[in-house]
Image (cartoon, rainbow, N blue to C red; front, side):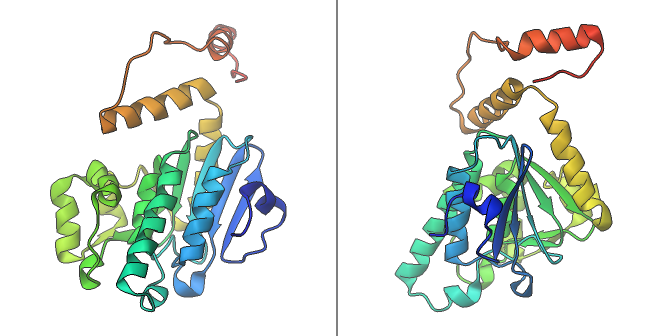
Length: 257
């Protein structure tokens, strides 16, 4: 394996992926543009490991890609060299890696420029908020490859676009363009390509201005509602953030959470 995210901040030895921490904002960048940012099994493993070892000071995570692509998904050339058993194991690794992004307790942002296909599409959906450029597009062309998507993988599509649209995307291998993605709820925000990086940073800083306790609670409880595991707590306010938030509101200043 290639090391923890904390090490990567100062020593990005593997050029295919990069982790950087700027203040409290972490950014994972997929950097394999000649392959449309298609991800090898090692890259998926690295992604999962970075999510597991995220530096403690990280309060927001951004995931994006270089070279006009988010990610074309898994590297099909690599997959073509695998036996059926090996391919099944590779997909288990992909699901494991994406699940680590799902499970992060901090807000996550997918910054999507260009195509997000297959596993790249699901990786984007595993993030909490999705901001895309006018060149972003999405697809799940697994029917052309004989890939049989499993419920753990598909649930992210179903919860975002619903069962009928999920089936349609696989049945027809359609490509979802940026404007339709906004209408379908795949994107929360749609910006000009040249503005994507700036607007993603602006969004991350806006999130940083909110109460950490409020962010943790809404992420945990919304996920619980979706999965049917939510349980009410008696604690509606945070002992530290609530007094500061109230004081800041009355004093007409930004809160210091």
